[in-house]
Length: 349
Image (cartoon, rainbow, N blue to C red):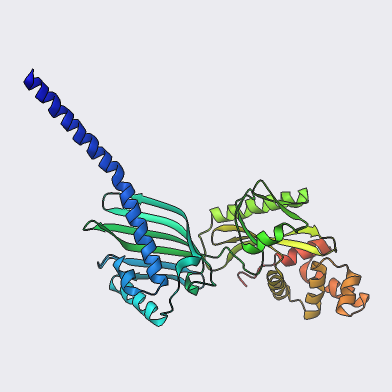
């Protein structure tokens, strides 16, 4: 009986050890997760504070480390080995201004951990008014870490800058059903008073059913382009203007659906974009300044007489300008003409 009792105790002890080992294995990933996120935050904080030594402590000291950056306007850069540290030291020495990381946030954090390696993905969003300008905007970040001597260190950074925020105009990021994923401050501020746009069940909704249908068809078209296009971070892959109608004063309201940085964007109340589009149209169709001026007034919703009065020309002169624009574009109606010119594209010219 005694020997049997000993065997029972021994078996219980073995089972307890196995149970405790299982508990330790379950707890270890959470401990590792906390340690990894601490490293990620410490590296960001050190960069913002321009503290090179603190930044370097978060990186593994090995020849194979890499930083891969894809920035709008700057293209893709790859830095490897000792040059990673040398580059960062130059950056921090050249601009030693101290910044607190209060205007930076991380979203959609995802952490995957194996035995000695982990990778972290997230979106980093920064306000240009209070952090270094090179960190402003939205970035997708991938950081790969290795566990060296029981300590997690960064070995690789892959960073892609995304421009989803037109600061001068309202801008929504949506999916192909017009579900709103994100909006900038200008969009939030104008929604309550906008005569033609509302948000219903987190979806962008236009007052006119026909315009709503056109919006969804346009988003479907742009999404199909995205599915077969290599991501480009230096320009808009596709744009299409949508006439939303007129407000109470008779002013035409126009929005643009855009494929940029792999995202579907809707922007409106954007005179900068409107003028740029008309500049492109004038170049593509070789319009004179007088003809471009007439088109600008027609786009604003004015009839030919009102446009002539605004421009200080006779109605007959305005009609002559319009006829010459028809001849150059091959279009014979004002609505079709406005649509054509707002969607003019100079790619390939």
